Image (cartoon, rainbow, N blue to C red):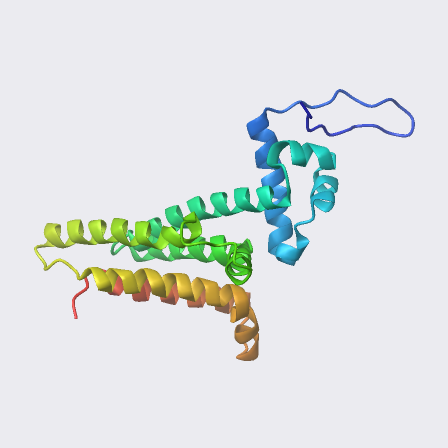
Length: 219
């Protein structure tokens, strides 16, 4: 089985001991490197030879773990789906703790925008790779169901009416659309109105407070 190893060779001495990793560790290392390239260059940066060179392994080693570039893309999407689901549930499920909500909303934007995930998902949609049966397509339904359950529990605890499920759906859609929009054109728009990186963070915090204030679903 191919192993991922980092050479400690120098012109004046032989190579050091090879570092052996488990298959799980090797896959994680490759996915981390692919994610970094995705964030910097978008889907066009996902070239197996470049990823292999970034972490000092061979091209066949990546093929051993993922079979092909498409296999690597599928693995990236599976990881992104898990991260996106978990961070959105944390962000929208944090109730009235404003500071925590701001932190979690920041994680949602980081997962989609800062890591390049939204660009990859958009590429999948535009190229027909995201089908109706894919996890990418179905993840919003899972998020909405879980959020509705959390909002209903909160309403019962506070003695308030249960929020309408469509209202929960709109909250989830608003969060996803805002994060996707920032990933695709948000930074250019921010620069056009004079916002720097700190300004973008202030927008994210403002957006978190907006969702927090609507958590009860009271009109």
